[in-house]
Length: 455
Image (cartoon, rainbow, N blue to C red; front, side, top):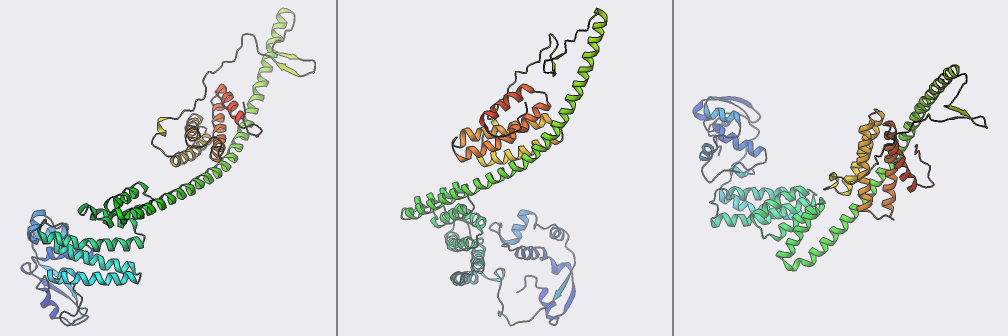
């Protein structure tokens, strides 16, 4: 019963356990590409007839102009002698082995389907779901192979399709038990494309969507179940209630997880901020001392020269008070230039389309990027990162949470290090008026707390 007839006389000349090499001319190997293609598809767990149109094997080959394997296509174009290496494993009595699907005739396949169905049901009762799923899948493959030989739309084609439905549903139930939810979604979707009134198909797909947190899709399928079968309305209500409860629990868990992450980042960012502030403060103190010495020296020199010229020494830059402390007064006409720009934090267009979880992730990411840019002394870019993070915090406080709740307070804790870091960047960029206004607002909301708001 070999598709390559030449193989049988080869094996008949061998002993059990023997490995032999046979050379065959091109006359006896003409069908090898077609046979090899089928065997390769079977080895991959695929139906060798899948995708073929209703015609003979050679007709399909000429229709598609390819076997799908380049080396087989080459042999088809240029027939040539082949060498086969054969190993004889065992010799059994005729029909004493389990015949594979491609070896069966149509009637044999149809007789095998109920046997496999029954074996699958027994395995399900024994809770051997993976083994049961393989039985159902084998039965489906047999029916699809037979169906592929029928004309689409014929009564036999339709009846075979109906026989496939319960086997597919049983297979999906086994996959649900094995928590292979995406496999269930794929098979039920394919099934529902052909059988749009299959209530069990919608129900199993809804369960799979619910298991992978696809709330919208699960609700849609559950409602379709109630629409198709009104007697299941109570069951659907229970399932929707359970789904809603699970989504609330998931929301609470994720919410707590993100708050913990933010608090941990807040603690680490505070330490980094203190180190940065200490270093910057020392640097500014040194610069101030140097500048003060230079100013004093320049003022003294100017006053001495003026006194020598006019007969008196007139010091306008440094005056001594009664307490003995020196007071530096600005020279006439000097005025500090005021910067009228104010830090305005509005919700930008980027906020649209994002949920609160995405915004919290972006806040953490922007804070980390800003801290890194400060270390690199790229203060302009760092300030842009902190401003964007504060926009998200403002939006969450104003739109998403209660102003007197714990969530609002947690967001306020997140705002504090962001504002302080932004102030540091503004100091470095000499935007002093913005620093004054930003820290003024910050001190109003954090009365009684110690924070490094350097003005």
